[in-house]
Image (cartoon, rainbow, N blue to C red; front, top):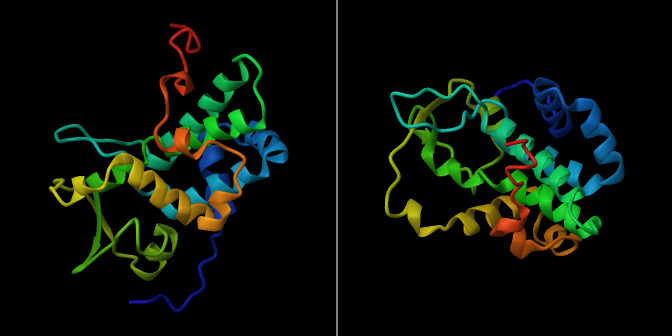
Length: 197
């Protein structure tokens, strides 16, 4: 059933709430002032995922961490690590942020969002923010992956979400390495020394 009331949330308000919950709203504001395309990406993913989808864990373990929070946490940590590397530039920084942002995106195939007989398709349906407004009784469960799920590689899933966030033309205009975003090389992963280990 479609809600008769307009959705009061926006991509930026969903993102702002997640950043506040992570305790990085102020630093994120500074980053986005310098890199507006990164705010566009983060807000788009926030609108698509919401904070309602938890990072999937196999029973009996129970996750309490929203998948969106993990995506944002990695994005800012990967960008911060890139800034410590030799000769960081806009292209390298944006590549690192977006690669971190989409690192865990393929986990979506392990989560099922259902209301009655209607199942949310994360790669083809409207963003979860809009879905929840139309389907307020949605249930979130872990799901068994099937061979058809595995027909899409992690790279394919990241590309599908990247084009949902930016559109195909928007992706083409990004000053970033799409290849590295979709399949992050080891050099983008923060080192153990970066985390003080």
